[in-house]
Length: 164
View 1: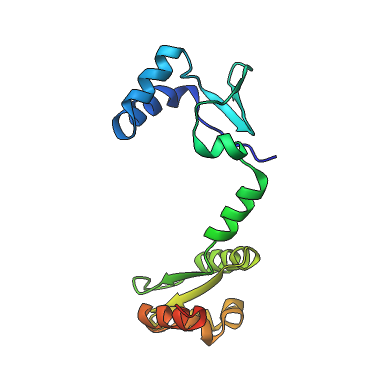
View 2: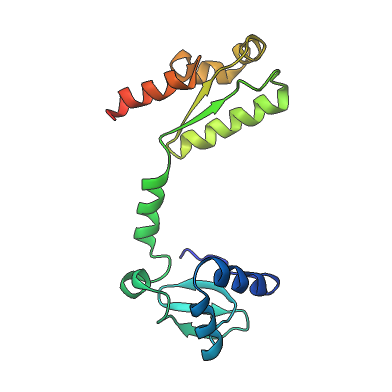
């Protein structure tokens, strides 16, 4: 069961104001008139759970909720799969030196990305960064095929691999 925090009491006024200003002021007025501008801690299916413990059936959210509910597990899984990038490119042209903790974080980040199905590619490393990278396990893990002189080269490789 996937649940999401909706808002905190401190955010409620700001959230209402922002929604009215940027999205739909009439909706905020309607919810206020109906007494339904509540703060919901979480939602699942057709239910909204208020911060005071009350549970509401959601008949107002819109098209998707009517059909499948909030946080439908299959739809959530498919959206994550669809929007998980295949490649993350880091442009290191503005990085003069790569120190140990940054390299360690990049290595750990690459592991997490790989587990999620995303490849890390590095672009525009200066000679000092390359020298540090060559002495690290990340260099062997990425290999030359995931390091590029320019962003244009990385984009061209991705397009070649994906046929786009």
